[in-house]
Image 1 (spheres, rainbow, N blue to C red):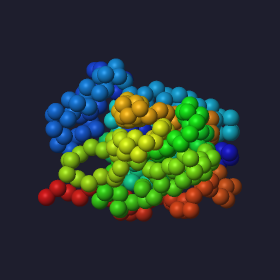
Image 2 (cartoon, helix red, strand yellow):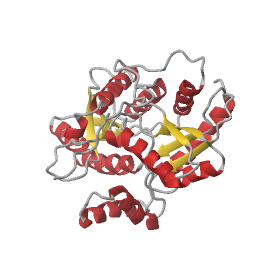
Image 3 (cartoon, one colour):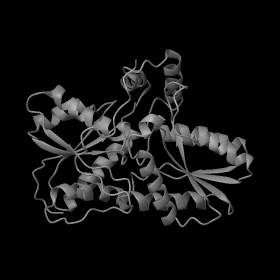
Length: 341
């Protein structure tokens, strides 16, 4: 990768998570700020975190990813320093942006730990980065965000290999494959390409994992929240496992394609709740590992950086047919929820 660039740093941006029981309540307060979540619902979610020691896997995985990306950049001839900031847990974005300013960084690229286009997986991250820069004030760097990249080969092939690995753990036979991603309210899903991108990623992964007719696959959704009367994308992963069990399916493998970086929603919703549903029904269960620790995933990030920093680049890596997203999202794309009446 050529080192010719106006950018002076790379910022990795993630949702964040607590790393001790004392951090659970402040974390949930940030996540739910302004959403009027009932106290009993917050207590339920806090209890889930506390059952797992108050720790989400995501921060540890980001530390490792940050180190791997820094090494990959150095090996490719780039001198970009790598920073990391979270939306909802330390290191908070504003603190990291202030650190970048103090280090003299004027311009930076940001990679967001979700490859999909939607308000919650893209636009909200961009808005929070802008908010962090506003909070830091004078001298804050200009930060441009790397494009969504749901069909990048560095995302697709590692996920395919880890799905094949999960299937190898199940008894030979007619295992069903569920590709799981975070659900969205139906009205928000209708205003973006999120559902289409998740479905295309699933199809690309299924093809490269060598799924046969005995391993039929489908997209399911998880981690819905909010008012129970609001329609969200369905089917829910646990509900679908119940249905498959009733149909006589002997085994199920779940690929968490909506979450390339290991996090609490994967650990709880899939490893605990979905696995328990399958086991109660007498079904064998396997969950494909997340891909953030695969060297090809690290190389994907540096490749996305090269798209913006290497003037000799003439093509962008993409496997699907939905088209490569622009570097700068059009104004008004992926709108947020309508204001409450």
